[in-house]
Each structure stands twice: as structure tokens, then as C-alpha cells.
Image (cartoon, rainbow, N blue to C red; front, top):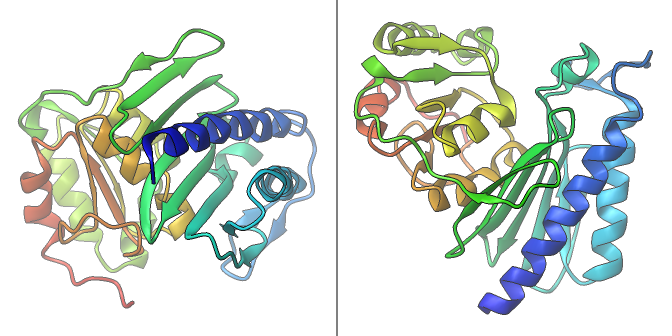
Length: 268
């Protein structure tokens, strides 16, 4: 992929993420019917309509690209590009009226995640990155500013965040949470995509997901890496396909892996 092609797709990604995210605000803090999917996770008309918007925009601009999304599955393509979409990451926050949810757009080129956008419409805040182009943080209509991870060298002086504590128990890794919490100066559940945004902008040192889907991860790897950090699985491999994730400021990755490597990888 040429730098100009990557830049073109990145600008388009930011545009559609903001458009779809802002559309969710029409339903935010409103009375909604909440459906339960097969894994018991919630979904609403806001999730579905946002993903439909993303898919329509992509199909119109890049009709030969593949698409995979949380709500409507996979559309095959033949261009070597695949868009990976999470219309609302943090639906539990969304249905609770809490603005810590986001719209996520990722893009793979020949199997590698090369760009990502995370946009939190309830905060009017977001971050985007593409391979070799840095990570950029924005609020409202202000000009984006370069995003960088923190320089803290130890979790004992840093912040550890996650989405939901009982997910560690579901993964039979409750001790991982307890060890991370004991090692960290502060532990909070500012999770989902917001947790990774906090790491990439230097406000938090590590975000850990015991279980996640590809649409939760695809946008994150380029963002974390371009901000100077890392996005890996629990064994330290830089991948979006492991069903788990760790985002760090890079300085404390080894310390975190000492804990997470005690637990076997998820079945592939």
C-alpha cells in the first residue's frame, strides 16, 4: 500500500467513524429495546444502524473491499483490503447512559492491520493512526494533536484498566486480575476502547482484555504502536487474532507479561 493510498483511506475512516458515532447519539440516553445475542451480549438499533451506515459508505467508496462487522458478519472482497467494524464498542455503557463507548474502524491490508480509528461520540473525543503516520488525538473540532504513551517504567507508579473484572474469571484467569491490581498504583474499569485511548494518550499505562473479538482489536494495534506503545496477546505476540489483548506504554510490557504468561492461550 502506498503512503498516499493509506492516507486517503485513513481520512475516509475518520470521516465515517465520526458520522456513524454521531448517529448513535440520536439513541443515547433514550428508552431503547435491548436485544440479547447468542453470547448474551446486548445489542440495540443504535449498534445496527451505525454498522449499516459504515457498510454503505465503504461499499460505495471501495466496492471490492471485504468487510467484517460485529452485527452483520462478513462480506467477502477481492482487493486485499478488509474493513473491520465495531459500531459500538461498550454497548453496556451505551445502554446505561454512560458516554465511555466508541465507534471503531480498522483496516487490514493482506492480513495486517494498517490503520485504526476510535471515536467516542459522547465525549467528542477520538484517536486515529496509520502505519508509519503516527497516532493523532482529537477533541471536538480542534486540530488533532500527536498522541504518545506515557514514560512510566513501572506499574507500581501507573494505572491499570480493564473493562469488566468477571471476564477474567470467565477466562479462568482471576489471579491475573488480582496480580495486576496488586502491582498497579491505581486500578480502574475505564475499559472497552476508551481504556486503550487512555493508554495511547499517556493517561494510563496498561489496558488488559482477557477475551475480545477481532472487531474489538483491529483498530487498536496501529493506534497503540504508532503512539509508541504495544498491542499484543497475553504471550507477547503482536496480533489482533488471539481473542485477547494487552495495550501498554511499552516500558511495562515485560512486567505485565510476567503475569499473563502464567495462563494458557485461548483456544484458536
